[in-house]
Image (tube, rainbow, N blue to C red; front, side, top):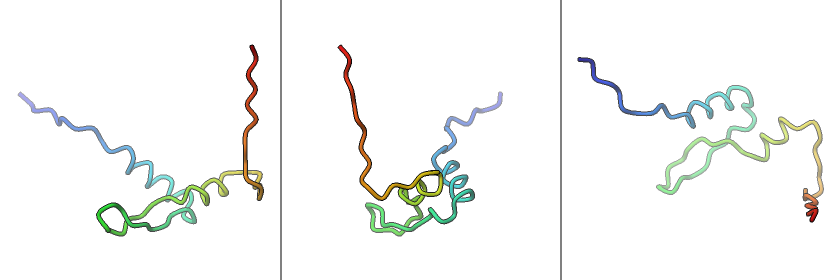
Length: 67
């Protein structure tokens, strides 16, 4: 009888590698909770890379509630 591997692949690492390959300018380094230097994706740089429109003003949303 074959034994099954009872673990789920880490999708976060796979997604990080894909984002790093597509947007190398968004890759940065930061310090985790253990004091180790780790690679990370800079969200602001990533958003600038994928956005067609860049706003210098703080963004906000207008929410309307219809009763």
